[in-house]
Each structure stands twice: as C-alpha cells, then as structure tokens.
Image 1 (spheres, rainbow, N blue to C red):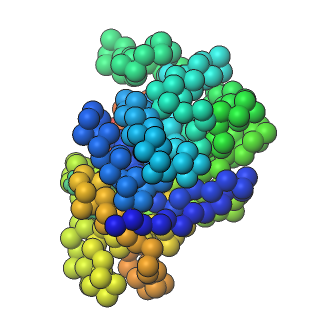
Image 2: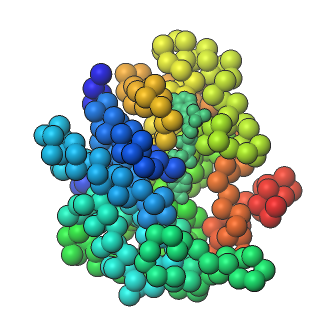
Length: 334
Ligand SMILES: NC(=O)c1ccc[n+]([C@@H]2O[C@H](COP(=O)([O-])OP(=O)(O)OC[C@H]3O[C@@H](n4cnc5c(N)ncnc54)[C@H](OP(=O)(O)O)[C@@H]3O)[C@@H](O)[C@H]2O)c1
C-alpha cells in the first residue's frame, strides 16, 4: 500500500503534509526501520526534536530512502525543534547546526522553538537536556523567547531552514512574539486531541494565518496516566465506533479525521505497522458537522502533556489552566 497525503499551504507558500509521523520514543535500529517503513507507506512529514534524541535515526532512515531512489529530499517535510537550553541567541545557530548534521540534511523544512521556557545552558551534548537545583526543581533561565526568535529568523535568512514556528505557546505569548517578529511563525505545535481540543487557540491562530500542528493526537493513548483517560476512552467509545462503522474506519481514524476537519495537522506516533497504515488512511472521507460536534464533547480541558515539571517557570504556558478547576490544578502541581 502507498498513500498520497494532501498538503496545506503555509502563508509563506511552503506546504506541509496533512498527517505527520510522530517520533517521540522512537529510537535505535527498530526506530530506523519503523521510519523507513512509514516512508514506504506514504508518510512524507516526520516530526523529531533535539529532545527526542533520535535525529540520527531520522537522518539515517531518510538518507537510506533517498539513496534507494524511493523519495527525493524535496518530497519530504522534516521538522525538528530547538531545545530549551539553547534559547540564548548565541547558542541557536550552533544547536541548529548540530541537529542538521545529525539529520544529515542541508536544510530542514520546519524548525520550532520547542517551548517558550528557556532553561540554563548545559553544553550541546544530547544527554545534557535539563539541570536540577538542590530542591529537585528544573533550573530556569530568563532569556526572552523574543530574542530567541530573532536568532531563529537568521536561520531562515541563511537558507538552512525553510520555515520557523513555535510549540507550546499560549495566546498572549504568541501575541507578544508577533509584536517583535520580522518573520511570522508558520505554525504553533500544541497538544490537540478530543480530550483537549484547543478550539480558542486554533481559532486565534487561524485568524493570523498560522496553522496548528496537533501533537499527542491520541492523548498518548495507552501510554498516558489516568489524567487522560477520557481521550483513551474515545478510542473505545461505542458512539465513535458507530461513526467509524459508517465510513469503514477505526476509532483512531475517526479521531485523526476529526483533528483534520477542525483545521489541524495531526502527528500521531504509531506503535506498529498496523497503526502506521491506519493513521494515514483517512483521506477518503470527511465527518459531518454533527459528528464533529460529538467528538468535541469528549473535551475535558485536561491535558495529557501538562509539562507540570516546569510549572514554576515564569513563562509556563499553561497557567491559564489553573482557572479550569481544582481537578486540573491538582494534576499540574502534583
Ligand atoms: N512539541 C511538543 O512539545 C510535543 C509533545 C508531545 C508530542 N510531540 C510530538 O507528537 C507526536 C505524537 O504524540 P505522542 O507520541 O505524545 O502521542 P500520541 O500520538 O497521542 O499517542 C501515541 C500512542 O497512540 C496509540 N496509537 C497510535 N496510533 C494508533 C491507532 N491507529 N490505533 C490505536 N492506537 C494508536 C499508540 O498506543 P499503543 O502503543 O497503546 O498502541 C501510541 O503509543 C510525538 O511522537 C512527537 O513527535 C510533540
């Protein structure tokens, strides 16, 4: 089977395939094999990050498929991300260059600021992701993400990055960044799934012609803790299964179609070949307004990825969640 995936255009003219391959926790030889298998199946959009420690694996898989003549570089859309310890403007180019070298590429299609929260610099090696103080808290830095963005803009000027974007930014942070940006972000990559639909942020981004990339589209499914049980429930819910029966699709496919129909680009992480095949086979149907409304009712306002370890950071982006209720508050500060 080989699937052709539709693309959407960013405001800058570059296009992103509407479904991507999530790679968090993909690693080693098995990781390389699974990425190559995904390319064979039709995935052209691959999401990695310095933090995932697998840029080398992505690079090897991509190089193998290009060397085989199966794809051309220009057919692929590769995203990687600037880690939080590299926010000082003087660290951005070097950190990016190392990512590019690990990926064995001349350019990436999209470079994202992984989070708005700067952390203390710890060197460029991949094992040095985070440092902790004596009380066990992550050591923060007060570098302004607007200054980081200015350095990322230079990467676009250098030709080594096609587009730049953000991840885990809330609306006020995005607005402040836009007030100084010379280059607008093409996307904000944020958690989005039926359990946490992000409708206001999606509408806000749409108004600015900024796309939303949906991470953890399955709410991390069975890997999640009890906090995202509702999203996991969507994957077994009988009403969602009935919608699936109408189109000949699984619950997971209905979830991914829902995310596309509300205007996002999901990047699910499959665990095996069957899921890899399933997640790309969603472009021969669309949900009705009633079906979209039903999926939206699973929204609990609870994140599968609350980044609670950063909740003391002055730029912690999910503080607004504290207003959602004590249940969420407990989850974040736990
Ligand atoms: N920018 C950020 O801060 C950020 C944060 C998180 C993630 N991400 C990106 O987003 C990607 C996806 O998010 P994620 O990995 O957190 O979680 P996810 O894609 O929401 O969940 C992954 C889990 O979903 C299940 N799944 C996938 N396809 C399925 C299918 N067709 N049917 C049934 N279950 C299915 C699998 O569970 P089983 O193993 O139980 O089958 C898999 O382990 C990441 O890999 C990463 O690239 C970015």
